[in-house]
Amino acid sequence: MSNPTHLLKALWNEHNLSEDALDRINLQGTDPVFPSSFAVGSAALVSMASAAAMATEIGQLRGLPQQTITVDMQEAAIECTGRFTLDGKSTPSFAELSGLYQCNDGWLRLHANFDHHRDAALSVTGLPTGSKTSRKDLEAKALHYSCEQFESAVLEKGGACATVRTFDEWDKLPQAKAVESLPLVEITKLGEANPKSHSVLSKGQPPLSNIRILDLTRILAGPVCGRTLAAYGANVMLINSPNLPNIDSIIETSRGKLSAHIDLTNDTDKQALDHLLKDTHAFVQGYRPGSIASHDLSAETVAARYPGIVYTSLSAYGRTGPWSTRRGFDSLLQSASGFNMAEAQSKGTTTPTALPMQILDYASGFLMAFGTQVALQKQITEGGSWHVQVSLAHTGLWLRSFGQNNDWLNCPTPTIDEHLQSFASNYGDLRALPHPINFSESSVVWKVPSSAPGTHPPVWPT
Image (tube, rainbow, N blue to C red; front, side, top):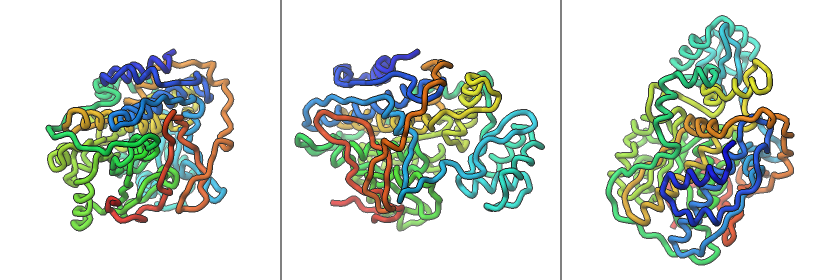
C-alpha cells in the first residue's frame, strides 16, 4: 500500500517544489479510517495537506515566518463526508430518483438531484416528468433497457448517468486511456505577464490575505476548492447564475465566500464580471469543457484580457477524449470507472457499492486548491498567466493506484456528528465540519458567513 508521506512527496516533486517544506508537514494516522477497501483516508489526507502546505509557501513569499502544519487522517476523511445540519435538521445527499437501477444486462447509476436531469431520465422511459413519479415506476421501466441503451438515451436528453463498469471494462475505453495520458494536476503557462504585486503580511495574518478568487463552480469539488482557499485567508467571491438551481451543500460550501449573481447572457452582468476580473488573481471554474468558453471565457481568452491571472478548470472525465464534454459527478465517476464494482467484489456482493464518501469530489477540490496556489506562486516569482486543470477521473486513477485491502472493510464508521461545530451563516443555525488543518502560526478562519446566492453585489470590497 502507498504511504501518505511518499504520496505527498511524489505530488510535491512533480511540480518541482521546495522539499524543505515537506519537513514541516506532520501527517498523522493510517488507513483504514472508514470502512472501504480503498485508501480513502490517504486521498483525503494527502490532497488536503498539499493545499495547506502551499498556503504556507505563499505566506513565506509575503513575509510570514515558516510554518509547520499538522493534519490527522481521520479528521481529514470526516471533512470529506460533507455532513452538516441547518436549524438542527439534515438534508439527504441524493434525491429520491438518484441511485442504482438494474437494467436487463447490468447496473446503471442515475444522478437526479436537479429536476432537469430527473426529467430527462423520465422522458426517455415515457413516464410523467416531475416529482410525482415514483422510484418503483422508474425501476420497472429500466429493466426493459440495456445499460448502453438507457445511458445513451438519457445523455442525449441532457441527463446525467453512467453504466456501472468494472476496472477492466473502464480500462479498455478510449476515455480511460485519455485520462492516463494527463498529469494529476496539470499546470501550463498561458502567456507572458509581469508578476503581480502582493501586500507584505504581518505575523498572524492568514497566508492568502488579500488574494482575490472568483469562484464559478457549483457541485462539491469546485466549491470545496474555493472554501479551502477562503479558509487560508483568500477573498473568495462565489458567482452563481440567477437562472440555475443549486444543491443544499451550497449552505456549507459557501462558508467564507461573498456570494453574487451574474447572468452570463446579460451584457450588463458581463460588464460587472469584466470589472471583477481586472482585480482578480485566480479564476476558478467547474463547468464542462467548452461550456464556459461559449461565453467568451476560455482560459486563453481570459489570460489574454487579464494578463497574470491564474485560471483553474475542473472537469469530470478529463479535458480530452470522447467523453470530455460528458456530464459527470462523483457518484457517476465511481460507477463508470470501476470503483463501485470493485468495492462490491471486496464485500462479496454483486450489488455495486459506493465508497463511504464522495472522495473524488473532495480530493479533487483540495487538489484544485493546491494547483491554484502552485500557479499563484509561479505568478509571484516569475510572472506569466497560468492554467490549472484537474479532473474527477484522474483523481480516481490516483486513488486506485494506492492499492486495495479487503480487510479494511471491517473498520468501524467514525461518529460524525460529534465533530460538527457552529459556523456563522445567513441561512440559519449552521453546524458543519471544520477544516482540520493546524498551522503553527496562523488560524483557519472563514471570515464571511455562508450566504444565499445573490446576497452580495458583484464588486470587490475596498
